[in-house]
Amino acid sequence: MNESGTVAPSPDAPKIRITAVRAEHASAYVWRNPANNTDEVHVGGEPVGFIIALEDGFRVYHLGDTGLFADMAFISSYDKSDVVLIPIGGNFTMDPLDAAFATKEWLKPKVVIPMHNGTNPLAKGTAAQCQQALRNAPVKLIALKPGEKAEFWRHPRIAMRFSLRAAALILGAAVAASVAAQTPAYPGKPIRLVVPFTPGSSTDILARAIGQELTHAWGQSVIVDNVPGAGGAIVAMPGTPEAFGQHMARAITRWKPVVTSGRVKAD
Image 1: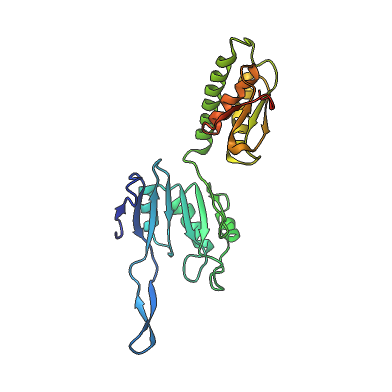
Image 2 (image 1 turned 90 degrees about the vertical axis):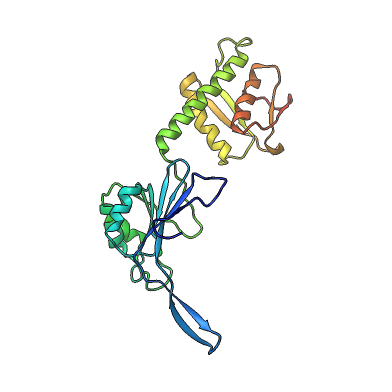
């Protein structure tokens, strides 16, 4: 591929697209010539940045190593990236002031992640300096350290809120229907939701979020009780109103098996 070229790197995910765009930077590499055993400097080719478009339309603009150039505004207006990775080290690339200017005036993303700084004594720019230069710009700066990661949603608050409400309503309706014949006024007491994984796990986090929505919908407290073990199998009392918790837990844990036993009670 070349500048302005777009590829779909995986046939399994054809909607993921990567586009090469302009960057402003010198490129060179040092090669040791075996004929005379001396180092030679050669032109390394054209510098580029990359725009990564995901299946849901979420876009990430990786500027690469670059200085300021006015086409950043055009690229941003055309692609409208949600997250921008921007160099701030200085000397070899933009410094924090340049990066803040490009972010505020040209790129205008929702999130900016500083990069290419602190790797050697000449790349002195810091994320704190960039944040200070951004001032009150409507953009969130995330300073990542090597090895750290960040997760993003296309519309985080709206999508998460509605998905949790929908899940809570669907699960709540299914559970209530399953015990309606036995306990018409269900639930008439606080609910204990057994989660077969440790606190802080993805299943636990989802269960607690859905539990909050069910608390509002039912007018009864939904209390998450972590009972890890058995490879995620759910233990519940069969044939009783208390056993309805197995339906919720099975849905949250992607249909893990349910073990019917009298040793552990679950709401």
